Image 1 (cartoon, rainbow, N blue to C red):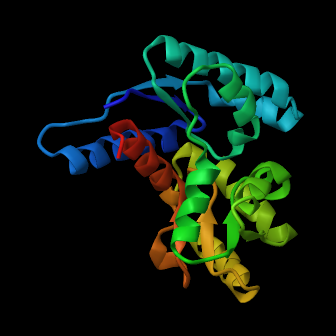
Image 2 (cartoon, helix red, strand yellow; image 1 turned 45 degrees about the vertical axis):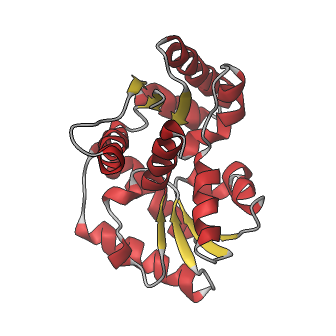
Length: 230
């Protein structure tokens, strides 16, 4: 099995899910006491969040590129950026290393297309929903991407940063997300992309009338398949 390098800590709540999923999926594939060969570089999310808020994506990309180089030096043979939002700097990170970077939006789009869907609603941070880097990557796979209205985007973003990244799960927030999802479905969404790795801590398939695409799990599944060469 190839060594999977994880650029995590954004937030560590979802990075812990990545670690759990990678190991569970490896055990499912190989059986017995098998677990994933992986190395983790966990950044200080407070530093990254400040750079996000300031719009200093070049500096944020440099921090992640340094992490990628460190992971490669530690033996990583493929890399994951364990956050949707920071795929805004995926090209900068990929250029810093010689090992492949498995792009989260690509793995998600392939899963959507495999399900026979072409129009999806996207939930994520304001950066992911409002900027073009993620929507355009999904669209490059032939997907039509819908995002919530302005109040919906603000709500989704607030819950991510003020609750989920802190490990806080509130039923009223789950109900609010369900309302946002219902609005996207009413506008024609055939599926919902949980385009923030923390959202899976709050929303499950039971919360949506259409299929949900859990990006953390999809990313982990693709990583294990790539690491095992299957």
